[in-house]
Length: 82
Image 1 (cartoon, rainbow, N blue to C red):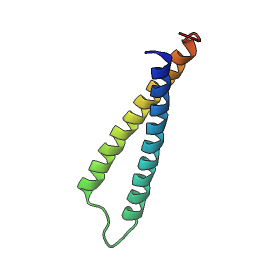
Image 2: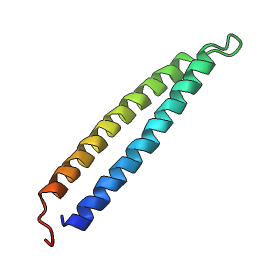
Image 3: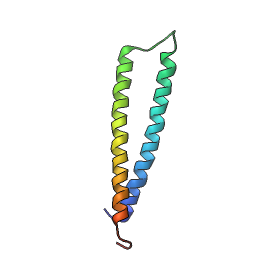
Image 4: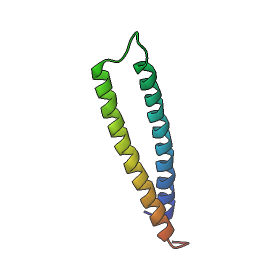
């Protein structure tokens, strides 16, 4: 990858991580509010599905973070004008 592509990858991963983090936070807030509601509560299947979703999103955030770090590293190794 050239420097321009590395910079684009670095910026894209930062953006995706931010969006995912806000989404995970929103899911957590929704889960907490729903769980504390004595009238409706939570269906055990829904809790299981949310758990698997959060596990997948956590893995995705980790992979995006690693990709961004690798792009940043390789970008620092690119010689000016290359």
